[in-house]
Length: 272
Image 1 (cartoon, rainbow, N blue to C red):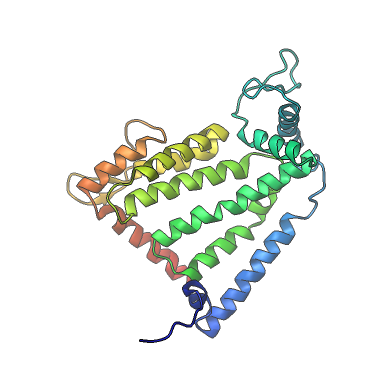
Image 2 (image 1 turned 30 degrees about the horizontal axis):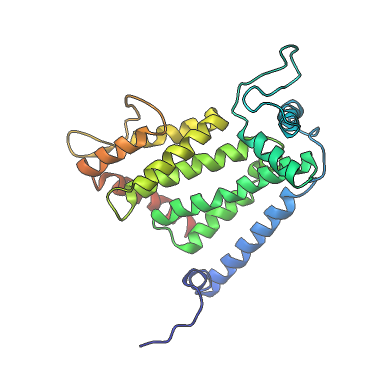
């Protein structure tokens, strides 16, 4: 029986050849660049870019930190009754909670929470890619391209809700993938988590969540037995994916896999 080298299998795949080692080093450099770039100006106030949106979010977080109401939070911009409750203040509450209990600067806490959710979104994204049967080296390349993206770096360092909504949206899609491509035919835990993540994503920022919410509606099975994605269906909402998944698994168990296989091959071709 061959002895195990003790090296994790993922690391072996990333360093299995000179080319793989070069990709690994470039990936590591890309992540280090991402961290360096996203921390530039960390102590700046919310007055550099998207000033109105950053300051509005910061004001809400400040009022929550000082004991203001959660749902009827105050935003003293448009006059009495000093309230603009047009979004669910989950991100603002997290920032206020951390700043209050750790006696931290509110502006820096807002940036830190936004950055945290950005990097946390890599975990469900990597889970999705694993279920699409990408190799660890390919997953690392995709993740570092996201991490080093100037657009993601720019938005994720602001005192704004964008990265929080992105995290919950990707986590929702990850649970849908676990349901449709998982080993067991039905997992109620994943269904419940999909409902929770989808609901939170929609509450934080529904415009970010909309593309992720309608994604499961594309997995339909035509009467001829072919796989297609017409993009239309009745009903919406995070819980819809559960009934759709059940119908999908019973009527077309290989439909989603064949579609994913074709798309995966195209991406793999671009990465090799």
